[in-house]
Length: 267
Image (cartoon, rainbow, N blue to C red):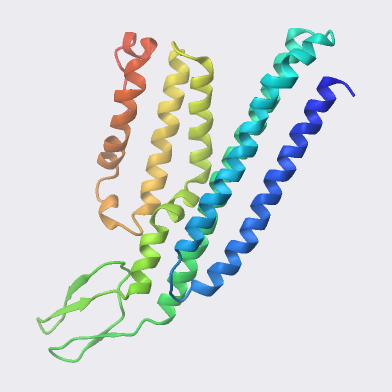
């Protein structure tokens, strides 16, 4: 078997193992979620996901470790041109990136499922709020924290979510928003990888593509997260600007093409 054929077989094996680990962990995670949907300690799920993450990362690292140790020189030793060697390397890198993305989405997916299960259980247990002043009843508002409302009689009606509702909000704030912005997230990660692959100094168009993808992601992510934290929806432009500042300061401002162009911020 040629070095190229062995490389392809190895990559397929890594992909298969990665998928199997995710599938097994997903089944185990969903079974656990069913036991804590109505309350209880969910930290064992976090510990499980941490262990699975390490296993998946080990598989991902094996791709380039194996390339450098066994494959790179072997392909050239068989008389293949450099272009063929480079294409084989690029294939391994692309598969590694795809596995990284699958790992991230797998973890987010299980935590989002836990949050939804707890939210559904908390919603089913909701009871009307009664005004202490006049006895009027109100349906609980959508909230994961203490809310005070004015009753028609002038009294203040308080809604204090129970522990289950609060935990649904605490667990779901990031993963639910991340799932909603998954398309923008993928585009952002791809743009970041493209800029990094060009190495510094990166051309201006790749820097600006990275910037645009990040801005699109933050708008979508924060719009979804505002369902949990309404204050994030009051001034979306300001919230995006705050989150982009670090990228401008620590990434863009270190790229010569960006500086020479006058630091053309889109935000």
